[in-house]
Length: 416
View 1: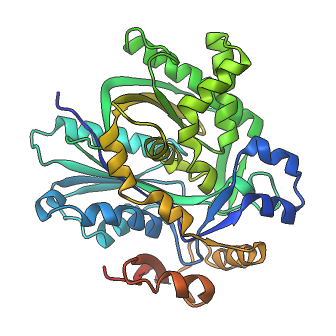
View 2: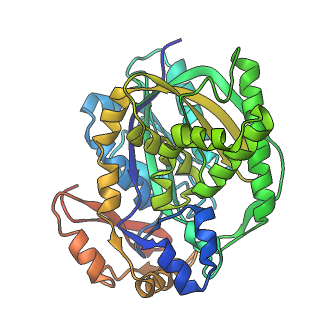
């Protein structure tokens, strides 16, 4: 069996953010809960951005870096998302077109709440592993744009972003431990989307399901990997991060139950093995299918990687489906991921005032699901778009119009 994993990884989390403590104050929320949330900023999509444009903007630097032969080797494109734009037509078709991928390519969309990106990744890895051709690659993109629920404690954690992974047999970023996968899934109504504009659920039930799946998925992993131990086997951990405080709480609960560790020992373990993975999520918020890969990118970028290390990855999707798997990363992984400039891009975002943020939410809400025709005013927020897209080196795809249900996109700034 050939070695398969992630050859390239990039993140796109938009052009703007809102400061979480400032949002708490403006909404009249109890600021005593900020420490439990562990959020600093949340990314916000522009009114002319959607899951398609986010996906393309995340993947474009990866695709542009490929040779013509390497690009021709992409036999599979999968987009994992909860932000579908049509009940039948996959948004992967738009992504495929605007990335200029070959027509000799499978493409489709996956949906299983926040697990859909991992589902896509595992399918892509299997396709590459099974191919008799060494040139075979797959592109997996997890892309979501949250519809925030204003004036609730959920709002400060709802982000927007996309993570693109190139899967192949030269795993520069992360080499998967083949066959080391544990699963835990069952039906539960912890969260759901009864219509495109609404998100419903039970926060407490979701936390309990997450904890149950973390324990269950790792237990299944341990039946397949002799001697696997949640503490001793993994140098680092990266977990689905709805908000960093939830990850910290889950880590604490599991180590108390499984390892009977003391509070100081648990705190030290979190700081050493999990803290690097939450740096990006605390600056972005929950981006659903892509959040676990945002945590992986954060771990690779921020951990001390002076040698090869094994990282345990936990993916959870409401409803629910979960998986615990592992990969090997090292100094080359860090050089590759840091070369994408993820932290620099997060630092360069425009800080929205709460008034600008609310204006942006109103503008975004004007495009209703299923509307046949709509034209965007791309100059509606010149303080953002005018400055950010003037840089010729930073082209961004945005949604320009919907005509007869067909979405039309345009590149702003720079060259395609």
